[in-house]
Picture 1 (tube, rainbow, N blue to C red):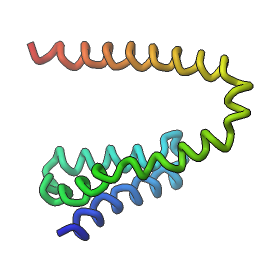
Picture 2 (picture 1 turned 135 degrees about the horizontal axis):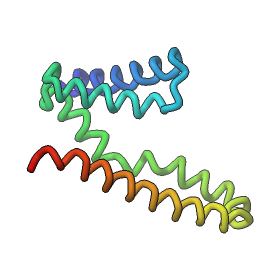
Picture 3 (picture 1 turned 120 degrees about the vertical axis):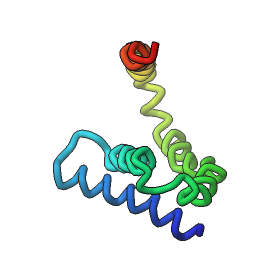
Length: 114
């Protein structure tokens, strides 16, 4: 069952990467793969039980996926120190843009549920 669930997850990732490359989309293939996997679950083409073991494995070991990012931070710490202000400003501005976008989207989507 574990192999089946990992196969489904990675097949969605591969499909997303392939679509992103072939169609020259501005979205990363991993995001497209996640949307594809969500659509498969939403339209009940696959059951949540079909990917539960693989997703649990990936979630339980998620800390390992942050090791390369941490190494990159250490490796480029001098660059980060020199560019701290622009990086900080872009983080704050992008955070507010995300909050506004999510709240606007939630407001639009929840309007029909009243």
